[in-house]
Length: 263
Ligand code: PEP
Ligand code: MN
Image 1: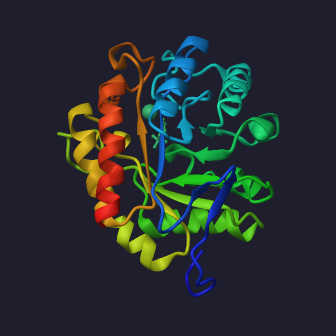
Image 2: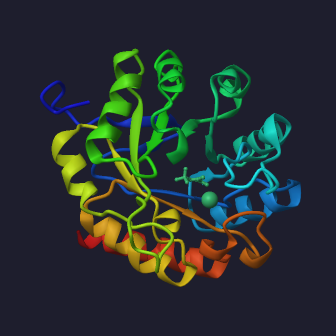
């Protein structure tokens, strides 16, 4: 995934004129977890009202506690994909294991590899064989080099439709959920031809600070921002503490676009 190998920036074409690429600002927003039909419809309406073309959400959730909500699974994904595609919205969702790839294949626009799976090399090998974009998040305690090596697994397997995501790393700092390492953005952009997106929601983990870190990500050179939004964040099944309500999301999206246009 090095620029030594390929000079031209990789452009991810999701169809219907939706791209994740250098020179553009992709916005991906949605809940941490897909919860039910009503929630999906409300988020889609919100995205459409703000011209956001990509919806995020998990149906397979890697939760720290096995007793927490772990997602609706494949049935939830099918329902979501049906509603989203009818609305002209693309979806990005996490795949947690090799056995899920095939069943998910027809119902995703981008496979997300979560931070807990960045070095699941079997999963990366298999994603190297599919004809579908893959967004790889930086590992929980992963270095920039390790993220690039993980991308290399998929790329060398034959799938060049890759996106890198900075989502914060675990440090000694306890005041925030993670430490959003915006240093990685210029470094990744310098080393690799792949698009880089920033996830300020997981990066800082505190709702009232997501806005600033998203805009900082734009100024650091990101090609996209992915963040969590929900009609009533306090009632979200997961990550409510870092989730924006729709008014905050609309404001942030507007500011991301304005900031990008000044970059
Ligand atoms: C998520 O996107 O909801 C998620 C679980 O992210 P990460 O893998 O970065 O923790
Ligand atoms: Mn989350």
